[in-house]
Image (tube, rainbow, N blue to C red; front, side):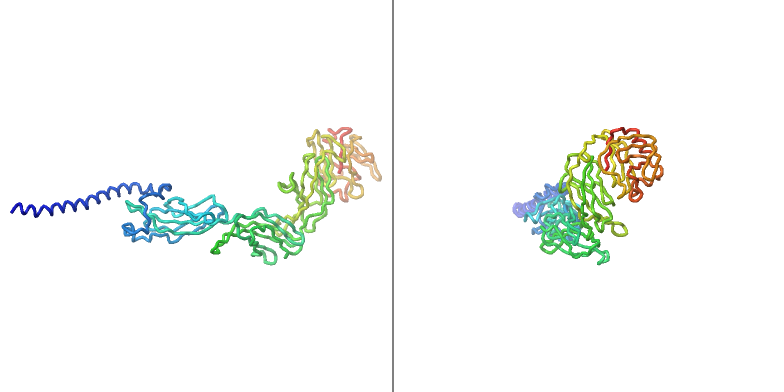
Length: 484
């Protein structure tokens, strides 16, 4: 009876032990694995190189336990967008997903490939990609990541198709501003079109879309709907249009022009003593003129000087070197006196060391009738410069030419038709009686400027006494005097 009972109970005991082993061992193993995974889960999210290849990462769409464990989460980013307007980078943002411990970001260069590349895993809800080409299309794919102990689960992807903005239109340059206004600009790579906005008195000072160039290779524009003497303001920007008609705009470049502000006519260009002298006719709407120079014909131009006169005498340049000059009129427009540059005339000239075919060496006195200024160079170094008053314009002009001092007297009495004048210092340089001397009958404000027009000398070079004394003390018989 006992033996029979033992044989009846024993199978139940064995079955119980087997069931305990079947259920208990996986629980212990799972708990051990969970503990190990939990301690490393943060590292998996932050290590962007290893995260994409982690064997424990399971797509959310896979059937099984993982799907059941996250049934309370949407598992998908509901809103993803771009706010950056740069031409070389893209910054995207997205809404956070409940219970997500990180986000995996993928990236596709739509103009080059159909494949996504993994960028990294982040905890924040934003990501920036830099060093991108402008006017180019890209696709981003972002998935949330969930930590379920033994498994890191990747949610459903959310995709954003976007693009970098075009580069800014650059190098806008005037082509003409006579009866029409024409300008050119640099080509923007990959741009779909260029928009041209215009502002003038007709639209009451507000920019309006004026025209659109739909051919990327066309980078010149001519506006014929202009009036002589009117000022016009333009803004130009590049556009990228994608397949879904989304438009991405580059930054505006500004440009201003005055219709009729044409290049002045050059009457003469001369050179002496390392300088280049220009004389031109007035441009109708010009308030002044800028003179630029360069050693190359097409680029590298720098501002050499500005004047409101119809002539310009350059600073001393390198003798024997060919220079290219541009003479551009400008107009000051509006209450704020906005400076608008007009079309320019160009000329090339090589400065010469000589004056009127005479090599004066490095020590000489130089007088510019147009600038009403004197310079005295000793051994190539400027010793003295001063404004002066030369002979009365049109009737008693100080004669142009290269001379030498042949009289040197202090004091002196000057005699001529109808006058006898006492001076402290006299340096005569022409046989007709022209020289450099002081003029105590003139106030300091009379020297330079336009005094010589209507109130000039009898042909001499009237010089402030402080300057003429310095010149007299250094100049000797035979010192060159050049008047031009």
